[in-house]
Length: 306
Image (cartoon, rainbow, N blue to C red):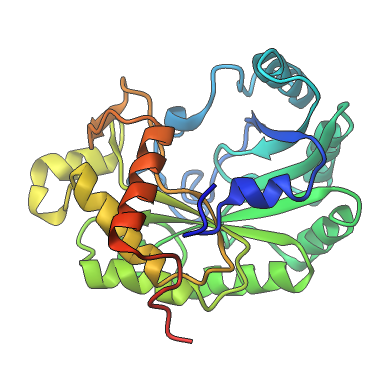
């Protein structure tokens, strides 16, 4: 256990008496910048096939996916709880009645003790947040917002379809209701300088965020960004593993130490991944992060200006 950054795994262990495992669910949602309401084609970096587990198929009902997910993990651990993780696409992008049916079908499954809902900051409203607030009185509820960048120039360039102010508003509205609030950020998006990247940490530190997922930029097949890399490689800084580790630690030094870190990297399947080809498993990466933190004698929030 590290004491140089706030680890989400330790935080969630303190909230439950048994081990907790997320079960990914693909409920067949889409996104407003895919269906034409805000745009088409989606974010330039996105291929949802890269993070949907095999058991997680929209052709199955929510209950069937939960059952398959539990079967996938259950043989590894005895006596554990589950969180229904609505991960693929925008999981609040539908009518409130349909959303309630989907969430409550998942919560009705034995040993499912909560929801984690991944969404966009432009796809929540007061009615939905009030519903989540009521649910959170009985279940563990986390709303995860794809922020990705705090630079409006970058958000426009990657076809995100919303600005940073939208993310700020959604995060504050969620946290104000006592709902656990998470965010995602991508380090290394095209045309972002190191100064811009580290500025994300400073800005996010001012928000009422409980957890943060930090991802390295991954270039995957079937995306507009893959074509951009081929045509304009000068737009990209493809970090080596050691360069990225130092960047992540520089970022961590500027981050509010009350924000729990859920991950530093993501791993796309090899058949999709173009760059970076690091070849490290998550635990190997974490070992390197912790070793480098010790070498630099630094920690989360060390350089945060109070």
